[in-house]
Each structure stands twice: as C-alpha cells, then as structure tokens.
Length: 217
Image (cartoon, rainbow, N blue to C red; front, side):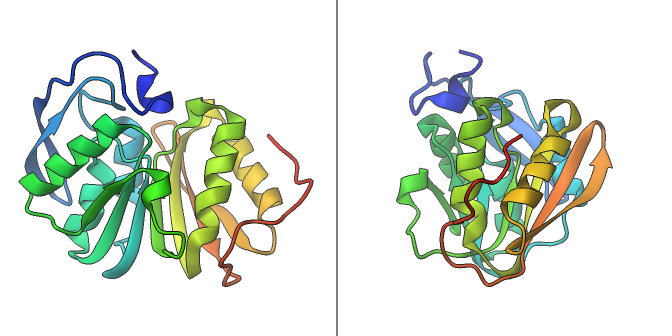
C-alpha cells in the first residue's frame, strides 16, 4: 500500500476521505486527503521547501504541477494565479479525484486534474512546479522529465524539489548533461535536506528532447 501512489492508477484499499487543514498561499484551507496517495497526513517537508523558495507564478497561461497528489502545489498555483490554467497531473486516479474535490471546495475553476495522456500535446507551460516521485526509479524519472521539461515555453522555468539523500545532486548533473544548450539547470536553494532545482528553457524548444547518448546518473 505504501508505494501504491507511485505506481498504480487505482490504489489498493478503500477510498476513505479525511479532513485536512493546511496553509496554502498564505491562508488556512480545509481540504480532503485519503490513503493511497502521496503524503496523506499533510504537507510533506519537500513540498513545504518548494513552496517557500519559488517566485510567484505567472499570472496567466498554462501552469503544471507534475505529480500532484492531493493537490497542494496545484492549489497554490491556482490560488496565486486565478487567471491561469493549472494542470494537475498524476497517474493516480485517487489523487486526481482528491485534487478535483479540493479545488471545488476552494471555489477554484482553473484547475484541470488529468492523467499524463489527457493533457493535449500542444499545451506549453509558463512554469512547472514539482515534487517529483524520485522512488519510481531512474528510468521512469528520466522519462518523465524528458516528456514534460521540453514543454516549457521559451524563458520559462521549472522548479523541482529533491532530497539530497535521494540523489538531488546526481539528478542535477544528469539534467545538465542531458539538456545542455537547451535547458539551463541550476541549484536555487537548499533547505531541510532538500535542493530546489531550477530548469530554464533558453532555446524556445517546442518538441521532445533529441539528445542521444547522454550520461545517466
């Protein structure tokens, strides 16, 4: 059950929603959570670090929360940028349902909770915020980043939070080698054992990464 949220569309166990009070975008909010999703007990430390070290999101356009869980990042984006469209992406159907419920509870009509394949291919993002699922393994993680990071608009940034003891530095080195000349990778912050990595599209890239033979971590 513990790893269900990383690998399965339908987690095992009954869907039992539970109340949750957290602070998002500077205000307390009443939401729902449930077992079978990432960090069901509240706001995890990595997400807290990310949200405290990113700049304000763009006020409009398409924004992406990659690996949304019950929705804290997507909801923060939607609260701070009410005129933007926020894509909350996850493979876990329970996580998506919770995100939809939580967006509705906050009166947010600009959140689109969707599986990866439900996001139209022509959507390009003004920013990506993510606490990515590191434990899916390197191949899955790298494939996820290859799918989504190239969809940043020109001069747009992605912000990723990764624990140091789960390979943040090696992931940064891999991205630097993988996307050289296309995406600029830097370390934006370090706090509570986590790195916040910034990835900027500096090339106007609009398609899949085509780099061949790049080193892997």
